[in-house]
Image 1 (cartoon, rainbow, N blue to C red):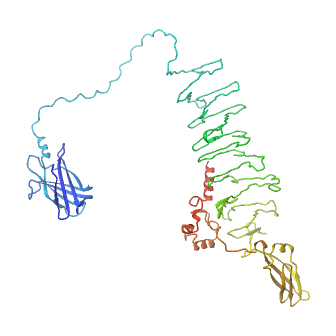
Image 2 (cartoon, helix red, strand yellow):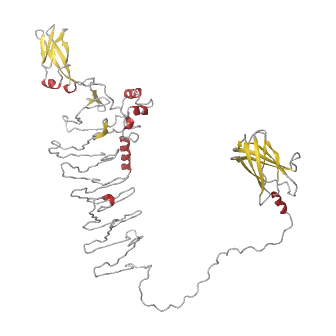
Image 3 (cartoon, rainbow, N blue to C red):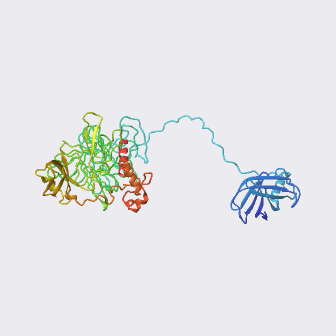
Amino acid sequence: MRILSALMAAGLAFAAVASADPLGTAFTYQGQLDDSGAPANGSYDLEFALYTSLTGGTAIDNVELDAQTVSGGLVSAPLDFTDVPYDGQALWIEVGVRAAGGGAFTTLTPRQPITAAPYALYAASGNPGPQGPAGPTGPAGPTGPAGPQGLQGVPGPQGPPGAVTLPFAGSASSASSAFSISNTGGGPATSANGGAGDGVQGVTSGASNSGVYGSNTGGGKGVFGSSASGQGVAGQSSSGNGVTGQSATGSGVRGSTSGTSGQSGAAGVWGDTSNFYGVWGTSVSNDGVHGTSSSGTGVAGSTISGWGTYGHSVTGDGVHGDTAGTSSSGVAGINTGAGGYGVFGGGGIAGVYGTSGNGGTTDGASGIGVLGIGAAGSGADYGGAGVKGFGGAPTATGGWPGVWGVASSSTTWGLYATGAFGATGIKSFVEPHPTDASREIRYASLEGNEVGTYFRGTGRLVGGHATIEIPDDFRMVTAADGVTVQLTPIGQPAALYCVTRSLDGIEIAGSADVEFDYQVNGLRKAFADFQPVVANTDFVPETASDPTFTRALPAESVRRLIANGTLHADGTINAATAHRLGWDQRPGWNGPSVYERAKAMSNAALAH
């Protein structure tokens, strides 16, 4: 095989090898194609013409191959000049190349001679040679069908009784035991040692039967399992119960352990599941699962992804907890993670419902239905809320409050805060409309840049003078500095002015003895240094995509948040501002918000 190459003026070079194909009339032409001095890569059209001379003459056959893939310069083309008999004459191949689908072909020179290998085709038309030796014997054909069964032979004599030979397998069709063993000597009726396998294995297909069944009529155990380190009794089922225990008066299943670590398998009763209930209890009239402990946990549930403990009831409490301890809880939920809930309630009338009895001396005259305590956070500027509520979706009549408190009477607190009270909206009082049952009256609170106190009344000048007495309650809560007085004459024009004003008394003088209205304003003593503009703690999003951040804000507040860079113009949270002010360093910033987590848990609970 010879490799020839020719260099084109256009910068193409083609080196070729012609080799014979063992069957048919086609053979493979291989060569190296360079484009601008480098191995070509891409799709090219190739034209092969067959000549009887090195130069000149007319092509006696042509083969054109379009869109041939060339990689690393390698060309491999199957050629079949079917119009040319290979009769021993000298032949040359001329090659033309162009980019696939366009332009004229570039002819590569010189033409390449076809060497002796393809002339093996010429021998195919010669005289046949002598017959060769016979080939090896082929494989045996398939076995034919079996013949008819022969006659049954005469039964042989019965052999002597002997021991069971292992392995042993037998079957029977009987309503009683197929295999029965009895031992009245106090030892086991049967003993099995499986080595590394099962000691005893039972299998049944009956819907109401047991793979292994044990019964004790004398007060002991129906089935007893013991293990030095693993499970004494383990049950597994693809759809039914792994282990079922039933008792008329005692415990259906009872577990006992002296171990102290459930993580290493030391549990009286251990339930384990990958995505459902580790332990399930149900009862028609009593406790589905009942646990008692003198010092530890009566019932404890642990799970990786599902519910640690799940309770369901048709008419009663799904989970009911009771305690007589003065510092304990009937039901206590603790979440040690960074984003879960100690106790979560969803669905029904109330997600979480709490009722209070007598709180004794620790909580005053009465207890607390629901108590929330917000722990300090891991940084100075964030922590937990004692109670946080999200209002329901807005309705045509207004919607639902995030937290709703109902007082026992018109003189008690429906909502009470120890400490400051804040709101991004208005502070209103609401009263019924006197004539239209479809409407109500809402009055908004007066707001200012100070924590003010006031009292008002009516006085009269006598001999051009009057004294306004300061109520004791006003004096108790009002700062000495900052007292102001407003006067309005009644009935006739008069010039009124304040001679002296202090918490000891206010002296008024005027040009005529007239009746007048007055209003005295002051500053609340405990908050006399109140500052209206402070560091922002209330308009900080909880997460990078907090869906409730602006849900209840008026349009003007949203406009300001866009103007100060908290929000983008489309209302989304500005990540640059969050990073500059360190908000994105808070735990859970890139995760779901409290509202989103609660909503997801609620949906999962309702779908369960």
